[in-house]
Image (cartoon, rainbow, N blue to C red; front, side):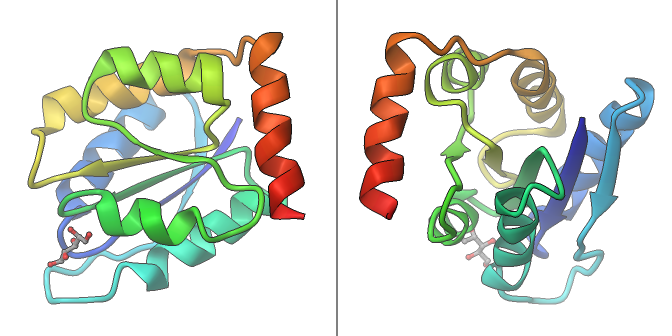
Amino acid sequence: MKVAIGADHGGVKIKEEIKALMDEHGIQYEDFGCDCHTSVDYPDYAIPVAEKVASGEFDRGILVCGTGIGMSIAANKVKGIRCALVHDTFSAKATRQHNDSNILAMGERVIGPGLAREIAKTWLETEYEGGRHARRIEKITTYEK
Ligand code: RB5
């Protein structure tokens, strides 16, 4: 699995935590920035990461900002992206099983690095269930066209 990861200035610490998690588990990733603590604009990171996932160059994406909200709004504008804003492990598992979410968004001003790591681990490990959920995703895909 290849993961594209990005953050704005509000999400750099959690981005580093998730990179460490992926290093430990031998998951391949590319960091699309930022590494700064000065103010940047989240769409400048969300959209390139989302485009990499939508194009198939990367299998999944992880985006972090202060709340995760801006990142998820911007990523979901890219056709083919199902970005889930998640701050608990139940939703991390459910959004993979039911929504086949291909980008995970989190907010560093909402949760700490320990929980973010657990959420990302659950989300990365959980498979999509297909079945009745496929029909629902198909309706979204049809609408996008
Ligand atoms: C930046 O101040 C903040 O607005 C951003 O990180 C994010 O929370 C936006 O949704």
